[in-house]
Picture 1 (tube, protein in one colour):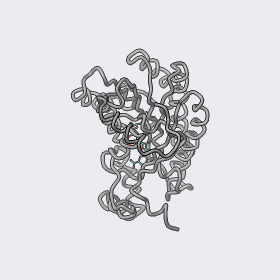
Picture 2 (cartoon, helix red, strand yellow):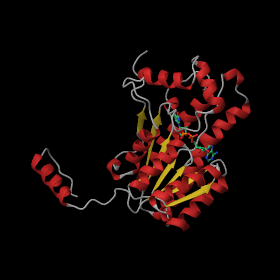
Picture 3 (spheres, protein in one colour):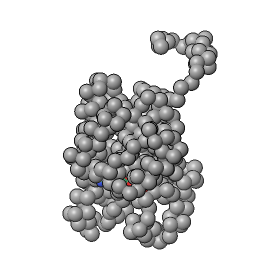
Picture 4 (cartoon, protein in one colour):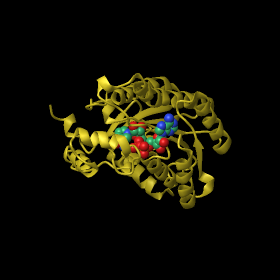
Length: 292
Ligand code: NAD
């Protein structure tokens, strides 16, 4: 569409009327998305959102059994031809490259990449072993690098642009007690996204960040040791911890996987065609961002 140059209400009304007359195809029809951590809460919720908008989706996850289970569930609802699963460790260079090869074969390429695979494992700094530090750096920071480097190779070859969405964390902007390795790795994801936005722009490759605050429900992270550790930090159990997070938000609401999926949809779709290098916090208004 030609872009209007000045304030012109008639122009906008005319454009709106034109839109109303047009048949509305699904907004991601014909697009192909890969979602790392696709067997987890945020990844699976994002897959549902994308599939409902007509995209084809490849789920990539280190947990072969879980990712196949999610694939089967999605295939039953949306059809087996539009969803694939691959067992892949984001820290394995060859496996990541192989997943993009599989995408090219299965779906003919890729348009949307959601780098989302992650862990939650951290400790007070004096108890942080080099192994724990490196695990955070390798899965989060290096994993996001490898997933986007291979994406860039394919996207540049295709010459049709694309959208990369990083699911980072509010902890990449704000410090959290006893979680220096995780927070530092998440901060590096955010800065990597900015660097890639700069590099990708000439090719029409957009790179944006979604920062969830704590998403307790539906997430595999929030089980076992991590849940126990974090709850203990605040002297609470799971329900108490969720209430703590809810109460510290301005909106007094819990953040859910589908809230993050909605933000991931925004950055994948053409409605955000003019956004790159942006950060969207989905945190119900974390009070700590507003007060000292
Ligand atoms: P989740 O545990 O439900 O999902 C994460 C998925 O990543 C799992 O299925 C896991 O198997 C997979 N994974 C882990 N290591 C991998 C590896 N090396 N290679 C490939 N896959 C791997 O957690 P989620 O809540 O859906 O988290 C998704 C992303 O959101 C993560 O990056 C996480 O750090 C981020 N995040 C989550 C929260 C939260 O509170 N849940 C808050 C902020 C940010």
